[in-house]
Image 1 (cartoon, one colour):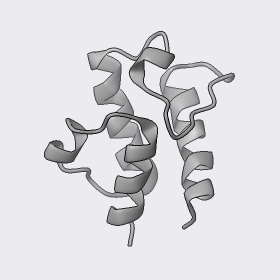
Image 2 (tube, rainbow, N blue to C red):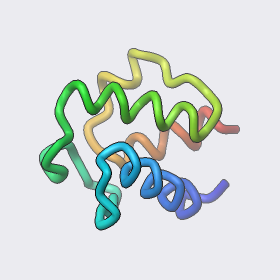
Image 3 (cartoon, one colour):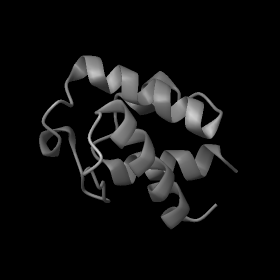
Length: 80
């Protein structure tokens, strides 16, 4: 899976979780960039990402992610 393919799938997940068809995430996107992205929605987002990619993200990795680019790195690493 390429980085671009991961971003395509993540954009779909973000749009569903935040119910906003206009969301486009990039490498540096953070919770500050999406209005409704609070701690509760972060949990929903992680669960949705895990379902989309069919694996669990270790909690230690979840709490250290600083932006969507780091999320993509984790997905690519775990998806090998």
